[in-house]
Amino acid sequence: MVKINGTMINYYSICHRSVWYLIHGLEAAQDHPFLEIGRFITQESFARSKKEVVFDNLKIDLVKKENNDVVVAEIKKSSKAKKTAQLQLAYYLYRLKEIGITARGELLFPKEKKREKMVLSEELENMLKTTILEIEKISNMEKPPELKKIPYCRNCAYRDFCWC
Amino acid sequence: MKKRIYIFQNGELKRKDNTLYFENEQGKKFIPIENTSEILIFGEVDVNKRFLEFTTQAEIIIHFFNHYGYYIGSFYPREHYNSGYMILKQAEFYMDMTKRLSIARLFIKGATFNILRVLKYYQKRGKEVEDVIVVINDILKKTHLTDDVNVLLGLEGNIRNTYYQAFDQITENVDFSFEKRSRRPPENALNALISFGNSLLYVEVLREIYQTHLDPRIGYLHTTNFRSFTLNLDIAEIFKPIIVDRCIFNLLNKRMLKPKHFLKELNGVVLNEDGRKLLIQEYETRLKTTIKLSGTKDEVSYSRIIRRELYKLEKHLMGEKEYAPYVSGW
Ligand code: SF4
Image (cartoon, rainbow over all chains, first blue to last red; front, side, top):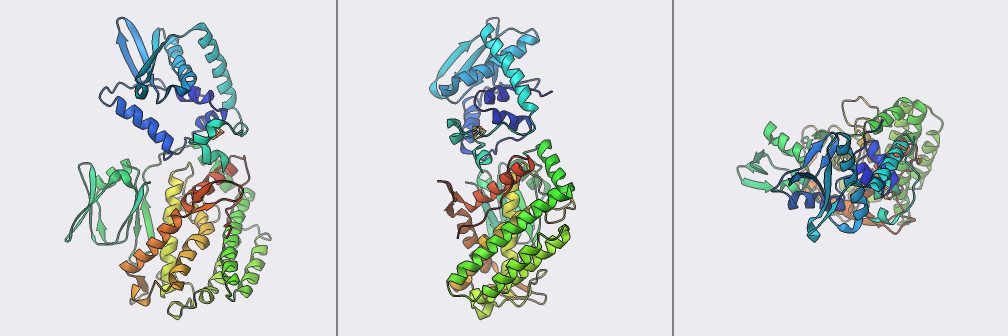
């Protein structure tokens, strides 16, 4: 069975093909300019508070304690893809819940100086369960899911790979 | 864009804190590590483990060339894209003879079509190359009649040798007559140019392979011995005519390269530093040149086209789309 991580959840809401790539170890080439920006933001904004936490196969950007709550934060470059980021964060909360840790979530957009709080609702949890099943289905596919042009392709790090 | 660094002089490459530098009697030269993709070493250069550890961390590939400009080998950082899935696919297509043959044939087809493209370009400009074109087409047909990869590789060699016969026609430069292909070491100036140019391309393709999930040790046309790189040799065949050979023709036809750029030695002929620099300059310019791909709006550089060629191969191995080699439009 495939080990699901945050990136897969993240990619799932954008494009199923990229999930298949990830599962098969086909990372996108890192010399793609948009990826560089993403890495840069994570590194620069929080260079001083190195708090990235690795839990099982998940890489959580930031974990802190506020009052008595555990707060898990995910850093993103723009709030444009908020829905996607929410699901990814929800997945962390879900996995923590599985091992008995109740945590709150926070989405951080350092560039926009914004932060957003979230909790794991039942609705989110159900959505996650379906997503996990779907990702498992994708992982069992012999070939990547059919190629379809979507707006995201334009800036996608897999662009050349998909469309050559 | 990261840059290639070429080192012609003798000296020592070192790491100091977080920078690299090259040192010899004439002085020190700093190499900005974050802007460097690879280092090509032509001079007698010493390096130490500290240096290699540092460049590996920065994912810089170091390529070594011998005195004749002939490629010796590379220090290839441990792979940073690793897909067990893709390596298994690559091996599967290598071990299954039918699958391997089909890829090998496609490589030859691409290489030959690009050779013919170059020849036809010069034919239009009044060069007598018709005979060569006819012979090449004949040999190409034979590639479909054999089921033996070694025979196939031999036919590819025949095509190249036939093509080389047209070089004198194309260049009409008595200082650079072809005679015959000689490699280790090259016996005349034209052979020295071809060897040097091809070496540059092998290294370039290797660099691009490093950015994909393919293992450079598994080639399809060139026999894999799992110890040295062969996939880059395969892919380079496709691009030699349109990248390397065109550079050589340009430099010779414009009379930019002269006999003074070569040294005749006891064992063979060597390009001197100025000669190498001329070819490298022409080559770098060509790699950066962007062209419009047929059927798309995209303008892409040759470097990018090489990368795409590798992606196309990956898709072939994934069973998604049959590989079709790049054929130049002009
Ligand atoms: S290029 Fe388009 S189809 Fe390919 S992975 Fe990216 S979004 Fe998906």
